[in-house]
Length: 404
Image 1 (tube, one colour):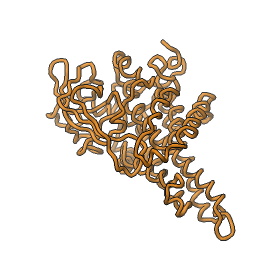
Image 2 (cartoon, helix red, strand yellow):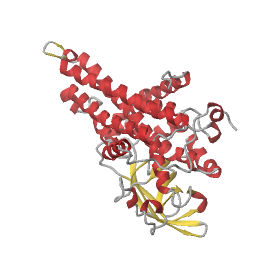
Image 3 (tube, one colour):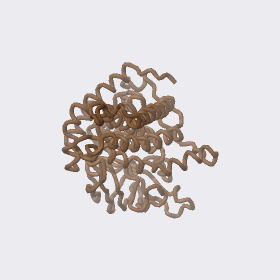
Image 4 (cartoon, helix red, strand yellow):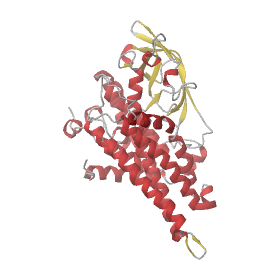
């Protein structure tokens, strides 16, 4: 593995950092208080090409590699988690699934406009009674000729009221002995008759983002909108999570860095007992732990990104990166708030928002407990990743960057 970033990687870092810090930082507190997404965020990310950053040029993307995707997510979440959530959902959970599993017709119809940012996408897996237990999904898709009739409701769906397309998983065969085998994935246009959605307010964190629900009442979905084969829904969903978790890990690394940078600035300007508080060993200890967490989290997500570039299965490595980075980001934000003292407990400084935002990632895309079980399963050799019919394509600079 070569740890040196290319000129292209550094260009991505600079571009995304400049957008996030110059355009979003000045307004993020306002929209966090209002619990609304700033209306310019999605159009601006589309204009900059961020929404298609690691999609091949021939499908409307920028043709960059998965390391560039990780670096972009780190810079986005260093300003606010809501920016990275857009990448996790629109890009990681939906667009990369289309790149991996979609037919050429599906890529042309759905992936191209998503990569260009002309259409926004979301991912519908979670239900009120089905989170970590994916086999408990009760949404149904009943086939009739060349169409399916979909009924059910999805909860805690990021971009639910902003999206044009949703990748959902529903039950097509309730009689399978293993309920995981009875699930199938579909791409649903959100303007279809019978689709309704709404926002969820009152969240602890990620308030400047869009989270909601989607309901399906006798929604007709054509056969050509099915992603993969019947019964592949669980495998497709898990491969989506591999990609989404990578963006979460990279983003959480950015939140660790933001907590560290805020703590460094405050520790050098705040004085107590006649000197900078950065001179006190217990403050230094907290900062040292943030440094350790940041460097470790970054190495873990870069390894996962490198494996993605090589076309290697990375479920184990991405799980570890996501678990470590999200737990570490919550700890770093908590310690940053402690360093800031009473000021950290108010929204005068950003660290209280970092702490609220960090908690969400410990829950979504696999709770920390689920990832602990996964890592133990790998270590004990109880767990083995089943081969997939379609793997995420390895990055190839020539084929990805040249229009064909």
